[in-house]
Amino acid sequence: MFFVPSHNGPGTPVTSTVMLMTTSASLPTGPEGAISPEGAVIDRLVTANERYAAAFTDPGMDARPVLRVAVVACMDARLDLHAALGLELGDCHTIRNAGGAVTDDVIRSLTISQRALGTRSVVLIHHTGCGLESLTEDFRQELEAEVGQRPAWAVEAFRDVDQDVRQSMQRVRTNPFLVHTDDVRGFVFDVKSGLLREIDPA
Picture 1: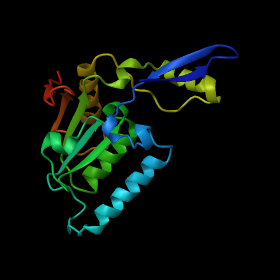
Picture 2: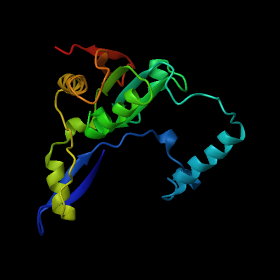
Picture 3: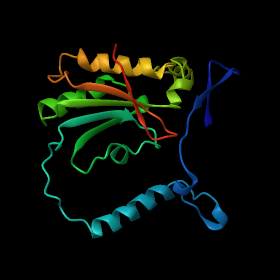
Picture 4: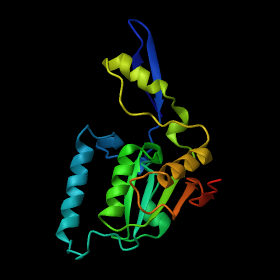
């Protein structure tokens, strides 16, 4: 966890708590275990891609997901969705953002996924210990005080993860742009056990 300082005016600091999820094994280190300078992590990713590309062969897949399913989930680094759901490359569309919120942009992606690329089912996944549970919409006001402009987007903070999943299911099921809304299911992923718990939409 770290704190982002902002201001409500001269001499009035405000702090917003932001959850930072990582593991020590994922941090690039230098001499004596010190964390490498900024930019080194991207170099590490580029180097890894070069190794990947050296052994890469075109799988010859179509852009349409094999299982005709779209998964909407939180961007939390602890969620390995393919492993958790037994998915292989090419099986699904994966749409991720902070909290797994069904925002206008998620609807945009789902609409394209269904209407242009043939998906029919939607899986919504929130998780325990989400960073959005520690934020409020005040986060937008704090940003406005700091930079002089309020974001157009909502934080989508919540206190009850089950209810937030229900709201997400309702947003998908009632959206006029989506043509397949009969197979929409929501879950909470337990970051301690790895298990999904299905949420009753009622």
